Structure formats: C-alpha cells, structure tokens
Image (cartoon, rainbow, N blue to C red; front, side):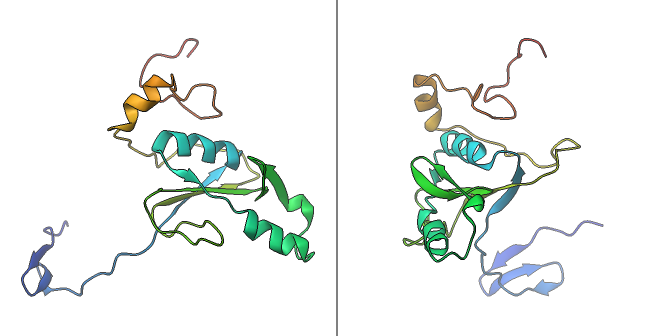
Length: 159
C-alpha cells in the first residue's frame, strides 16, 4: 500500500497520519565497490566535474609512525594514497582541509577482491548540463579511460 506524498504545512511537515517530525538532512556518500578505485575516481571526477580527494595527509601520518604497512599505500598523481580507497567530492561542498575529505556530495571507491558476478543494481543518471560542452571540446566520451561503459548512448563496435 502506498502512502500519499508528504506535504509541508506552515506548522511543519505532515503526511496522511498528521504531523511528522522534521528530518535533518544527513551527510552522505555513495560507497562503490571497484577493482581499480583510483581509475574509477579519476573517471567520475572528470564525468561529474568533481575533485579527486588528496588523502596524502591521512596516509603519510600513520605511515611515518609505522602504524600502517607501506603495502597498503600507493602513489597517485604524485601524492601518497591508500592503495584500496579513493574518493571524489563536489567542488562546492565543504570538506576537511587537513584531510581533503568531503563533507557533502561524495563518492568513495573501495577495492574488493571478488569480481562482479551480476549486473549493477544502481547506476548514476547524469544530466550533462553546462559541463557537456567542455567534455565535447576535449573530445572526452568515457571510452578507454578504465570505465565500465560509454559516456554517450551509442553503438559500440564489436558489441
């Protein structure tokens, strides 16, 4: 049974049963399992116009103290990074300056050992807007960038 949509009355939000408590928006991030988290972060940063987070401070501090083994780290874009984690954030949202960790719209990619066994149940639905012209000017369409699909919906030779 579906509920009628909630409405906002002058005294606060209501639904079919009457007044409901206000919900405070929560900070969110979408965590995505990936075989190559850094490649995915680079791809989605370019596709969405997001910023790849610089986690070098989060990596170098515990690494320098001997708290984490060097095998858990890598170098990405000339900076220390976690081998199995990478993230991108919306450039206009707040972030922690000391760690570059986004506090708003954010995608976190984590390496998982097992291969994907079924189709994705979730996919981003992108509305290109102003950034589409920039991507076209640079000839970027998502092919050959380590992505799992194409940017434009068009036939791909051999498929």
